[in-house]
Length: 292
Image 1 (cartoon, rainbow, N blue to C red):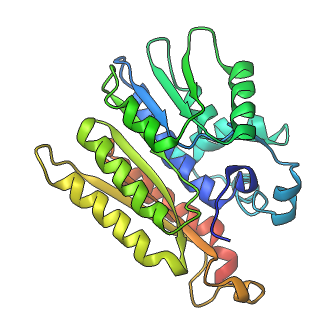
Image 2 (image 1 turned 90 degrees about the vertical axis):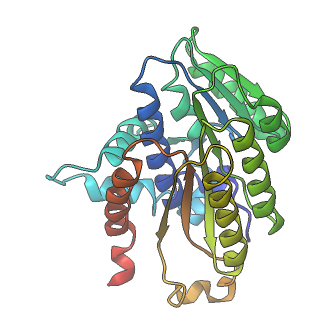
């Protein structure tokens, strides 16, 4: 199955990579007093129960955030900054058998003059998002929740009044055409808001490698050409070698997610070196059992 629904995969290894990267970006934005805008195009419900039947069935959190916690529990050497920050933010939720998604992590960083836009069309996820934000948001925080199409809303919101900020985009990629649609929407957003940091998450799927390559190539070309060329950064975490996907998954090999990636336009200063360190560390956590 190609769909990547937040509710069913909260806390898995892909979330660990995505949220480590997100937290580095948020930390960078918050270092300056100048306000910023965040647009999260596929927000989900913000906070997830790790006792959910689907999560317990797939054990994705066990092989993600919980595996990371176990790996780092007795570690004496310092952790990469993003991993340390990630565990700091997630541990209070894990202790209550829950997991904080990107909207809650973003909410924790916004200040009185910052603006957070959360877009979620799915009725159930939208309802949970509203409830979670209501229960956690501080009175002086500006959080706007949109029950609307993600890319149409992104187009309507760009450029925002506060032009320093971030677009986070992590679609489900249920259909192969979603890769093209994502590239088109983000290229358009970059043209309208060329100073924004744009961070897009994507799955690594054996049968979608062409679509993935086309999407990242199109984003890179758009970023590096035009009137305001800028830098890009890409990092990928592969849990399985595509030739050694576990035997029990062999029948689903063509659609199995063997890793995930983050593609960043306008990455903050030193994000590349920080995330390269993080990537090496996460490989030691999640790939060690596969190498044995």
